[in-house]
Image 1 (cartoon, rainbow, N blue to C red):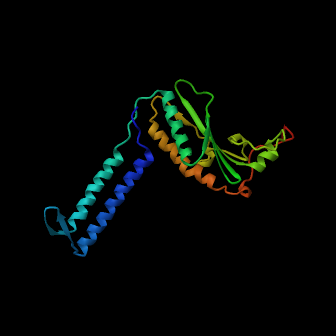
Image 2 (image 1 turned 135 degrees about the horizontal axis):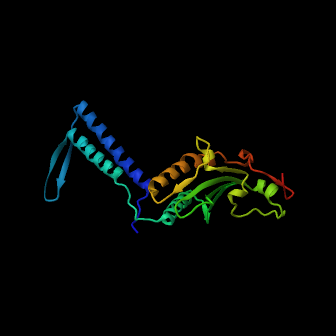
Image 3 (image 1 turned 90 degrees about the vertical axis):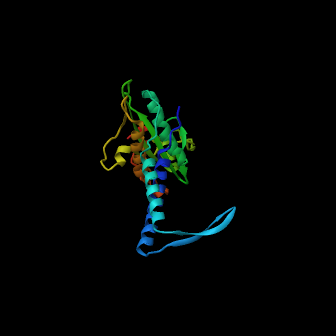
Length: 238
């Protein structure tokens, strides 16, 4: 299987080339407008040094070269081997796992958990029960966990022991990813035989970066957490 270029690294490389090109272009334009030439000594191992004059042409020429490299880098799309439906799901789920691993989440199956102080952050990949050989649908469940909430409302056996790896359904605040998006509508990601997994991953990565992480960032102390899930008391549902 070919090694897959990471999308984030690909975008950063494009940004670096583009920034360098813009800097050199500005330098060239300043030299042109100010009628400035740069001089320096070029030395060679077996001969005397010579003075070399650099005019505005040089940085602008280099800027054009870097711009060309940036465009080639931008449109050089990573290639993937042919995958069946299960292979595409494995690819997407691995990318989601890598995303949360980079943010110091721990993983157990389809569950991800990270704790900072008194606050825990949970994510769950939920598969659609109607998945079949032609389509795979899944969504993401998001949760905010606190020890105090779990001990008061979820510890029905009164053990006084907080689970070391809480799941999303143990959380005080529970949301579907669709509720975090601007449209506030239930969202399911779909994989079919025609799905471009790179485009699908770009969509998921965007949702995680722009909506899930900022949602987590809103909760830093226990006082920020106002439960929104159904609360159980004395073992009976309200």
